[in-house]
Image 1 (cartoon, one colour):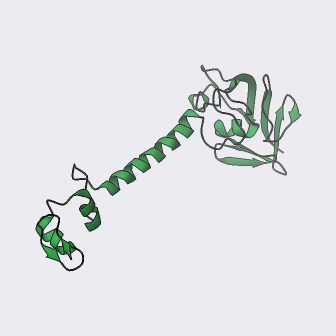
Image 2 (cartoon, rainbow, N blue to C red; image 1 turned 90 degrees about the vertical axis):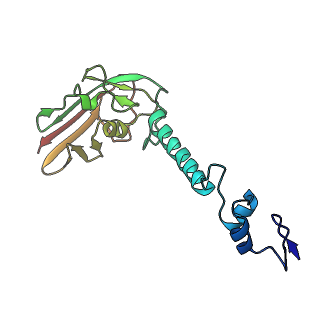
Image 3 (cartoon, rainbow, N blue to C red; image 1 turned 90 degrees about the horizontal axis):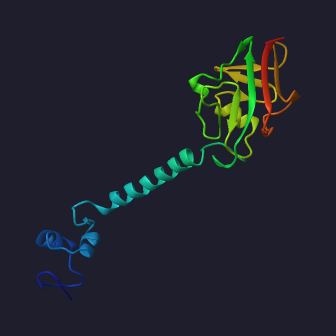
Amino acid sequence: MADCDYCGESFDGEVPDSHLRSDHLDELGPIDRRRLGDAEDDDGVSSGPVALVVVLGLAVALVVYVIFFTGGGSAAGVGPAGSDHYHGTMEVTVLGEAVDFSQQQYQLQDRRLHFESGDGTEWHAHATGVTLDYAMEALGFDVTRDSFTYQGTTYEDGSEYDVSVTVNGNVVGPDYTLQEGDSVVVTVERA
């Protein structure tokens, strides 16, 4: 036998959920409400969706922090923004057209590597371990050992184009780590 905690009525076995719903719904405590699936907090808001919103909010905050405050994204091996500060020069010429790094699209667009103050000759690295690949990606290009992508067109070294990527006059690959004073020169010409 079980007695209803709200009205004292006796039942065989447990107090039926139907009795609690029909006779005492407005009186139910939080445990009985959860048991019946009608759990709401004091404001009448179900606790499940509130918890989900809190968890999702924390996840979004973490992603925003990683991207905007640590320099973000796909920078394997590159240190956090602010972990170093060094400079060098860069020239990119594609089919006779020199890239103007003083344009806004190259100025302060990435926290780890960029041009700044309207100067288009000197790059600024603000992280340890900045690779040539990372630098090119930060500026909107893609570089491999045999190709260079500029404004959506990929130029492959071979029969139609000569693609040259050098640092301080030496041919380097995309995994080259930039150093203070490095002079990066990328040239794409017709073969």
